[in-house]
Image 1 (cartoon, each protein chain N blue to C red):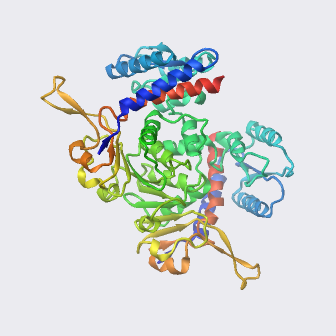
Image 2: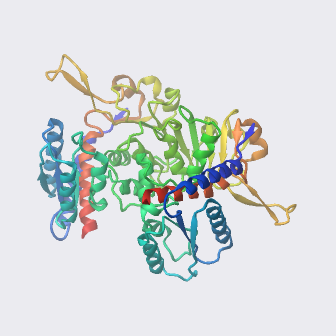
Image 3: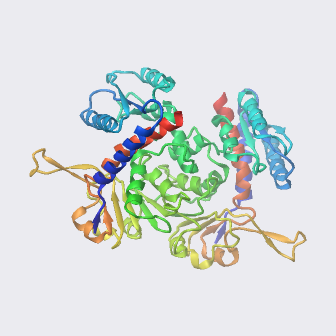
Length: 289
Length: 289
């Protein structure tokens, strides 16, 4: 069994992007980071994105509206960033307060600045295999992890567990593409799937993104499979100072011995998300030149 | 084995739409039909769409540019129809001449008038389960055939054979939706799939859209399966006056006895395409009110 080291691969990508940014003509890429309110998880995520930007040479612009901002005010704020030629990418950190329609906000961002890849147009371009679009960071990160670990999907059976818009569906569409390293046969399973273990056991590559701690057990995995664990779940653990530990959607102790390769949690898919956001921002800068 | 009668179901939908159109306030829906050149198949398809429109009470506007039209001229023509408040839906018949970029043309049509459902934005909305969009007519027709034949997909395994943008991918996304009649587990297979019969034999519902005549044989189908045959292939046949016969992607004589339900070719999915175009046009009219 081989661990896929997301921290190492993400660091490699960050280093490559730093070199690329240094070689870009004109001003450096600029990423607007919009964080509504003071949710502690959001504060931490946005901080990571700011730090990564700085390390690469991407200018970040922090915009911190209060939690009381109305949807119309947030739209106006986004419209201003859309119109600003100095801004290449716009990220609105989710979750947003309940009085704001998240899908409408993501659709308000100009598709060409939607470095999070959540815009309807970018999802459509992914389905169309139009590489001018932006792919959502988590599924894009999964594909990078596989490619950089030497796992080609061509002719393989990829089983995606979960059909969310930000992971399951785009990961399935990526694996299906007519690219040399894609070209997989793809099954999407979810909470309503009958006889789930019989399906997941067929996977050459299993992508677990169902949001249930340690849901994937050894009986659900074919020996020799590659397992990508997208889950990030907090499980109570009295032995930890914080009172919890992080676990994925895969029961690592029993599943990992079966796998040819597997991502740990933390340190697998997680670090790739920020790296892919940075990659999308550099891509946006190139497109705006 | 029960035949799914696409002609009958399409006629029912046309009749329902006629009633709906008669009850619409204001002017009737208007569909612009753009046919470039004189390709005989295109002439025949567009004629069918014109006839169906007339029978429902939809006004159709025929626009017949010569095969020599440039892409820029076609864009200008589409821009005029986009801006025309009297036009609800715009259909540009494919295939287009080789000097014109088809995807770019489909993307030029205003998403709100794209009754063919080929616009990037409408594909994205399908993935997002946003029902304000338009679904491509063939996959939409497949779902109607299943629903009106009493086949619920919930908890079933749907195997889609083919990953095209106009059938395979949207059909897979529809079957995956969190709708009561959808909610299927979905596998997409294609020309690069290894061990295809083992996968198609798992299908409770098999959607064949691979464009190879009589490709699906009895050994590929589970007894009791529902089979939807999307193929329309011409096969040489000396016993026919025309010199050919139409056949689907399924070897009907050996597969049909195994099925609980199956669509014939012709008379299965085919007639649904025009019915769904009409349904989309009425929907566009309602959205423009």
